[in-house]
Length: 312
Ligand SMILES: [Ca+2]
Ligand SMILES: [Ca+2]
Ligand SMILES: [Ca+2]
Ligand SMILES: [Ca+2]
Image 1 (cartoon, helix red, strand yellow):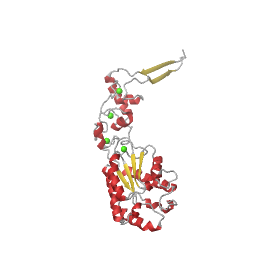
Image 2 (cartoon, helix red, strand yellow; image 1 turned 30 degrees about the horizontal axis):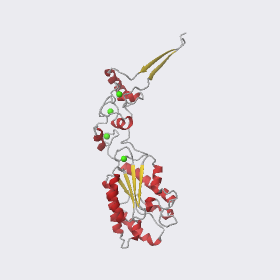
Image 3 (tube, rainbow, N blue to C red; image 1 turned 90 degrees about the vertical axis):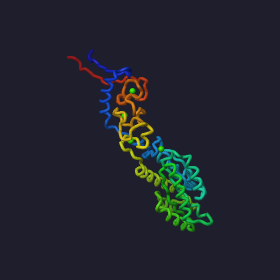
Image 4 (tube, protein in one colour; image 1 turned 90 degrees about the horizontal axis):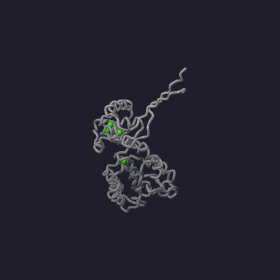
């Protein structure tokens, strides 16, 4: 025989635990540089409440609803195209004025308590309130914002879009002046070139630009509102209690895998050296591509393959 092949095969079965501990340490060192993002981001956006999804609620009137949009999805639908792995909810009610919007917000946000971000854009219909007041509109808008903040969502307020009805322009300016200290999204800056033939709703291009503007704001809001992760283990401080982990120790069970990696990436216990009790430590299983949370045997894995040169 020209070649002698030596195969060393690991079978996930009973193994001496002392050896396991030594090899666990080895693999831990091997994996030491691996890190997880904090309560993992989704499409680059922070999962503010650390529930494994990013939910964005868009609250407003017909402009949020998407009236006069050829695609009939408005800016929220386009936002979902930009962030396809998030959940975008369109809570636009055509024709709504802020006295109604304020009451709806107080009622409706309670059903969306798991929301990470809320976008608020309302007020343009208040022009049609007989005894309209820019101050009252501003107050109502801030109450809508407060209702969104009450569920713990990062709330981003937009000022009113520009319009092409000259008689209403002064009203829009008056409201926007009052919103200036409070808004985070400057929809007015997009100008009235994005407004459709009905003179008040954006056209498709306008909704594109609104969605892009919102997406930029969401990105910066993700950075500025990201909860604290003191030990940089990939789990926000407030969420560590949920998993029983220590907010000041990155690797609570000291097995070499950071808490965030165990919880979000591998599904193993951040409190146990051998999560599935199969005799192999979590880092050992991770290193050989086995599932540390599943005790069923994995296929045999070839760890070494030696090829002996032919003898002369
Ligand atoms: Ca979330
Ligand atoms: Ca942490
Ligand atoms: Ca660990
Ligand atoms: Ca195991």
